[in-house]
Length: 211
Image (cartoon, rainbow, N blue to C red; front, side, top):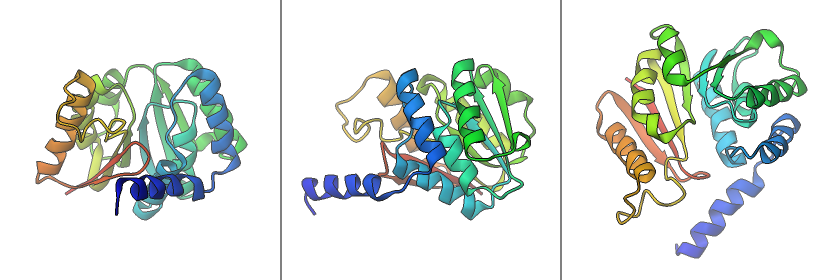
């Protein structure tokens, strides 16, 4: 398969994936807020992973406008609770709108304002089924360590943008963000405490299950 065929297949994945009204509305608001949202293909993967794990307790770092949270909630059981953390109050307001539009009871979501590295230490060890890290790349390695503490055995860590806009695969790219993402990917792939896969969905998704 040539590069053009692969690019066509990746576009097809994004275009064929139906997106619910709540996530689509959140995507529109993300454009207005100048927030980058996960692609529909990535969102569908999040919903699938949440459903496969029966994830009742989920932590999302980086609320954005609520696109990824809407997808996660769509895959979680009806009694599942999403804790989503972001420094921007406007982002969280948009997310709450998306969750309401999806008919999600307020009891199923918990929005926390603040820097993730300051908030996460207050969360309980081994209490979560899935952790999504969509935050500042500069903090990513420390956030991965926190995720390892928060997740139960068999819990799932998800890192979107793991191919960093096709730059991670290019060894000539040595800027700080690309280097950090490349190092995080490699460290998880090499760590025997995780079962890890790197998927070419959206801008890349790293999925790791804690052993």
